[in-house]
Image (cartoon, rainbow, N blue to C red; front, side):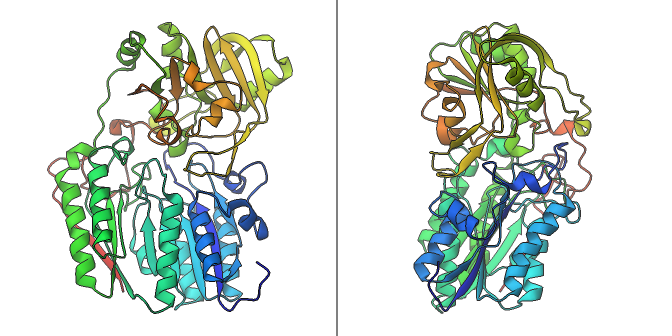
Length: 507
């Protein structure tokens, strides 16, 4: 880092998946990790170098190229409501100030579904601002598979690569891929031409796993296109809980000098997605029936997915419908991750380990977007563990980064062990249990507030995975939500939707 190098590159991260129906606020401090605030300057390099993240891949590419690296900021917040103006402006200002100070290239680890109080296209607005400062500067970005694509994103960067896995096991690879394309571009080896397009499909997140249909085959088609010469092919399922015009499925392809080639590859992927649009809809059954079926199943761990309250899609992570039904029906040997309830953690901390306590658990947050008020569950149990809630991620998704659950406690209610946390965290690494003394493989049931990311660390642990139709602002029931801004007509919200395309290109 101290070597005098000829090429200066700005490398930064600004990631947030915004659920516009979520009541969870998104201030600047939410973008920090590990209890150390939002990293800036040299701390960014030290925190993310060598990690399984998009910015980790970008940093490695810049280092291998021998470039002088400037790291203004690296913000990454768990999904929640609209990003507050102060937070968005602060992170954007830091990145733009670094560009304005002078550089030869920009590499950004972004999400693609950020909605701020001041803009519905957080990434596109940032990229356009960078372009206004340095109109000709090469810009490489990596994006989440759930990005909602816009002209402003594609038109204001040079190369773009999206994840091809969900759970996102290839965040590093996507960053590395994007960074390497930029290096080749700057060396004159390639001249990238990008095009993008969409179809009116508001795909549901539970139908986007890379091991499942219909998303898996689409991602394999994109990989095949790259193996045959496309610089990059990316399929974005989109994030359906961002009520903005561009929400939905899209494709971005990057060819070397040949726009017609990029357009053909794009259309092949979009046509294939449209043909399978019905498979992007998730159907659920009543919660009581699901839990009753799980009760008679043998061999564990059996994962019960409380997907309607998933923190990594903007859930409050404090609804208790699934937990209450499990207790009501008498399931045994259960571990739960997690109920986010700082007040309950404080009560247990005050009581101390080994103390029996009765408290109102969860249900502290109202959800006006779906017409629900918080409904706590009164439970009596014993405080088993108190923790600072920090551990290091070991699975490929985010490997080497620090997880911060905030002050954490484990409450044992009969044979149900409930992890109660103070900061929204989705369970994708078994460390969320092991760090507080619970071995997940010893349990018959694991209640996880997750959709697909849990597979990153629990795929090889579980005997079966059962979606549970609980309560929350990440529900797959479209009828719960009032969509006011998404383009219409769109499938499956409307009937008789035609494959009306939207195209854009950047050359």
